[in-house]
Image (cartoon, rainbow, N blue to C red; front, top):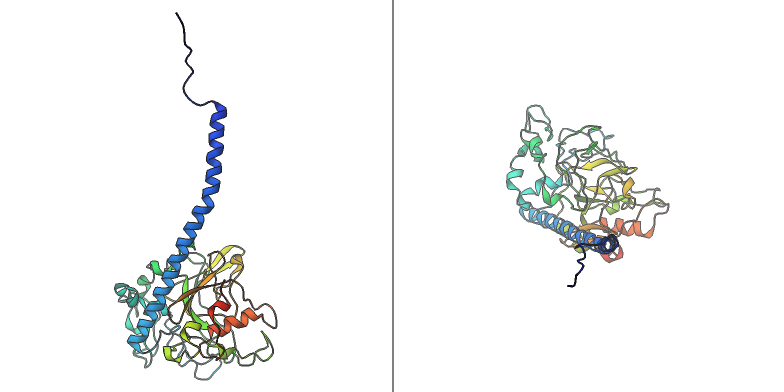
Length: 348
């Protein structure tokens, strides 16, 4: 009679370690590919968000005879050092609010009292306009501003916290300067909805200096004023450099300092941003008034014709004279400077 030996079922320790090692190698090979696919999808979503925003602005222009204001700030648009300067008209509303009906957000837009969009003629007995934080004179706006608008968010930027400070509306310029005043709440946690997008003001807006020495001798920064400025309703026909050559909307991450989020952009009050500081390259120290992106290697912009293109980070103005890339950025941000450049001059 013969006997047969039965081996126990299962893996030996060596076999198990080999299998684990193979799985680890496969994960190591697949993970970068998965991350690349995920970022490509996020980048495409961001591109579509900007395109929808650009189309909404153009539909607004068709309906109202001009593009949205860069922000509802002082009226008349004069410097704070001029005799007729007044903050009575400043309601703190940015361009992303007024295009809501053209982004299929009619119900949200309806929550904002029309007094916040007053263009001329003070309608109330106090002789001033409320801002969106005034729950008595502008009821509903504060609560509406706490909503999240998905198309105003870039999926590559995961920061959703209602953190540190709220980037707000610029109050005013002094006459012939490049200095912008930002209003915000320091060290407060207000649940206002975030955005990664806003309009392009140009180099430093309509009130910038005409003879600057900051970026080179005799630089005329006002020449490169852009589509969106304080209470400025730009017609597409006024973009004489060509809509396909002019930056209209761009993306940003708010302000960071040493890797920590210092400011965040809020869609209700985020005004148009100037390009004079260039495009952020160090995401750990990005300026609150600077375009930036968490995409790899590009910052996306919507042009005046609704097309979306990626621009490589850089074009900073740290040197005097500024780099050629910085000047190209200003020429593309300006809408009627007569110095026409194609987006390929700044793209990858």
